[in-house]
Structure formats: C-alpha cells, structure tokens
Image 1 (tube, rainbow, N blue to C red):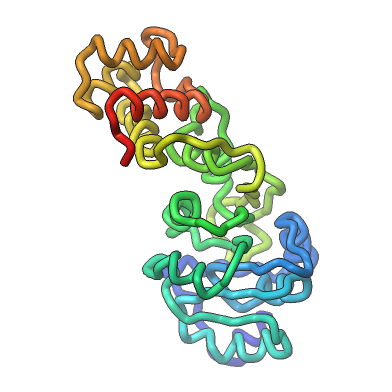
Image 2 (tube, rainbow, N blue to C red):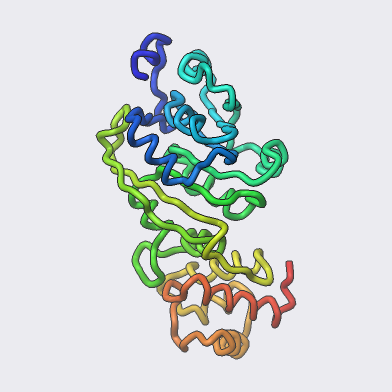
Length: 278
C-alpha cells in the first residue's frame, strides 16, 4: 500500500486526519467485528488508500465509500482494481445529506469506517439522529472517545453522546488498536466500537424531547437535575419536582447518574406534561 502511495506522489494531509491502516489481518478482523455478510450493504466514511474498503468488498454485497481527498483518485484506481462491488464517492460526507445517501443505498446498511478523528463525533451523531435505515456502526476511533461512546451511567466518561447512542442500541468496544499500526503514526491509541441498532435500544414518545432532556441533564454537572430542568424547560420548582417524582428519580440527583433508559422515561413524562410532542 505504501509503495502505491509513493508511486503516485501522495502526501498525507493533516487537515483531513489521514492515518491509514494497512495490516491485512487487522482489517479482516474489523470486517468480521462488524458482522458484514454476503448480503450486506456497507457505507464507509474515509476511503483513504482503500485497504479497509478492499477488505469490505471481499465480504459485502455492496460498498459505498466517501472520500474527501480527490488526490487519492489514482491511488484508489489501483488499490481497488477489480472490486466491482465498490463505489467511491469523492465528496465531504459531513456536508452531505444522509437522507439522500440512504435513498441511493436503497435499504438497510451498516457503517464501517476508520474515522478521521476530527469528524468522529459529528459523523456518529449523524447516524444516531438521522439514520433511518442504518442497522449500526463499527468504527475505529480514539480510545478515549470509544470509552465515552460506551460508558456506564455515573462514570467520568458518561455524557450526552453516550445516552444518545444507547437510545438506538447496544454499544461496546470490540478491540483496542495500537497507534503503531497506523501510517503515519498518530499520537494516541485507538479502539474499534460496534453499535448495534437492532438490539438493546429503546423507544421514546418524542426523539426531540429526549435529545433536549439529555442535553439538559448534562448542561451543568455541578447542578442538580431539578435545577437544570427548570432552566431548560422553563419549569417552576414544583413542576420539576413532580416530573422527577413521576420518573422515580431521587431528589437531588444529578443528570450524569441517570441511565439512558431513565432519561428516556423522564423525557416521556416531560412530553406528556408539557405537550412537547415535537
């Protein structure tokens, strides 16, 4: 892979967070971690030099891969030669319409990617909040971000993004990856996270109210959830206390101590009591 990059005079661009994986055993393991099968449609963000893309093409029915760096076109023409089930889209995925992309995919799909660190959370949240046909994602991210995605309620890593992912499904770290396996070598280690949107999630009466409840819960970690609710939803203290009582939340509790499911129950009561079916 490196010889192909050299051949085409490719230079790594820091602004795109380009850190490529080339170890074939690791790439095959990631594809296996993702549960890619012969009927799978896979969406990849960040084609890079095409190493993971090629590994995906061996197992999937179809692979659609987004790449922002058009200077990789000659590289990918060579590294993906013969991969007839792969389509590379040279476009910034972060600025693309997910609804339009899903329409082009034509059905359920999996997301598998070695995500550039600078777009990790926004891209993941795009699938969490807008991915109608997304069955889940398996992504390589910074280790500290991976721990945040899969954190337990009450832990230091637990936050709004954790609760958002948990509403859609089960999330877990499936492997840790040393920084030494990347070219160029980044300053941090990574981990592969898998989120399954077909199991472990839960429904809420209003997704918008749930998002606002989660935002409110983590608005100020020093304040009680009661005080945060008063600020976010313009409630009186009595109204905030009543909502917390209905949701069986202890008096004086802080938002980061509530599980995603408990936050979901609270958001349902807020939607009912305040008529916020947005």
